[in-house]
Image (tube, rainbow, N blue to C red; front, side, top):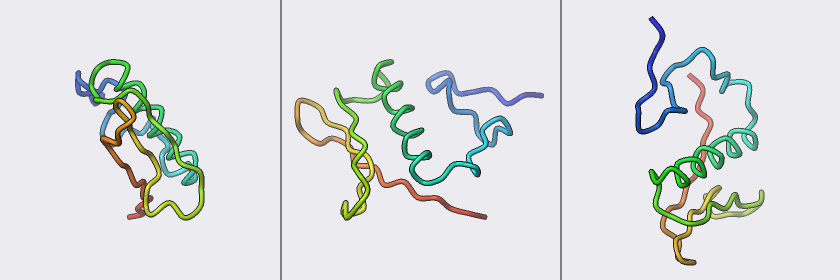
Amino acid sequence: MAEQADSAFPHMVPRSPRLPLGGLDHHMFEELVVSIMREDMAAGCLAGDEVVHLPEGPDGGRDIVVYLNSTIVTVVQCKRVTS
């Protein structure tokens, strides 16, 4: 039986063999997270009006920042974990 996505997050299916996340480098993974967050924002599932992927470098642990009316409302740090 195929896994079903949560109706609030149709693009996210836990443990899906169709999502080759292990093959993504850290930058590609961050871009994927930015894309998902932008889709969620457009669908009204994420508060904010802008998602910014910060450039590489000393970022204080921040990879993605979400703004609402020019105020930071969410900060994301992406980490790759191997099992």
